[in-house]
Figure 1: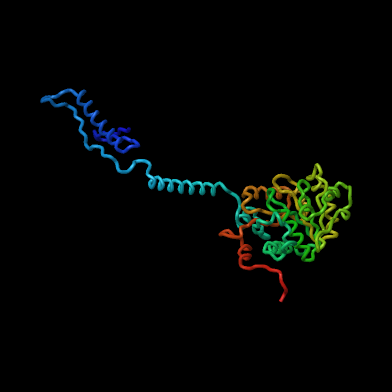
Figure 2 (figure 1 turned 120 degrees about the horizontal axis):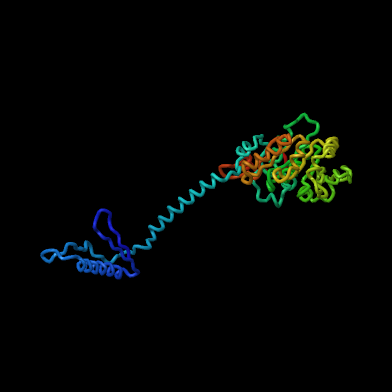
Length: 357
């Protein structure tokens, strides 16, 4: 039961709730009658057998036809309004707090470097990373050819070029990018050496199905000769140098004078050197090696890293005076409003292997 008064009046409003409509009305009317009798008994008598205070029933409670609660339609409407408002608020809050980079332009602005190419999202990339070999006519393979072309224009007059392929954090696709770019460069006639310089978590030998027990670390340690551990892979005889034995000090090895001399030796036999390195933020291996080469190519996965992480990676390279040659956005959307230009091209054209006419 609830009793309320209207502001500025002497009206009492009595509300009674009950599961049975008739009982609710009867209780309300009974309370009114009892209250009238109580007021009559306690109020002093005035002249002519009248009281100075009277309580009059304005309206008798009737049996309600509809329940006051619950009201499904009203409750549903209120629930929808509250739910939509809360959803819009949460979405707006998420947009404000989420600083992850999702478009090519956002990535370019965060890195303040040219975009060398864009690799679209491919759910099957983890199961088939060597797209240049497994599906050379696919749009994804064409993306690596575009990257190869842009890379060749970075320094076209140089006799030998060396590039560090790195990222801000793990899982952005740097190893896949390095391997497919190396295959593409080799297919164009370049003498390419793909070096797995990630001695902490090597991936190149595993992806190519090569033996990776002996490699770069062993050469730097002076245990083996470079020519003895370079392996050949694929129909184009791509030269690959695995990471080798995991050393206790990969950072010191990659930034050593011995590594600098090894680079000069590599340049004598190869046109292009590609180094797959660890991410920049966890360790400084990539930055140290980039300072000894032509520069670094930063792989940035769309929707995975934030603006601050990319800016910090750029700062890591600048600290050791290493040049950032450009960025390669990966996992770009191939559908929707944020689709990359390459994604629109893929939707327009299909690539199939067939006879040349």
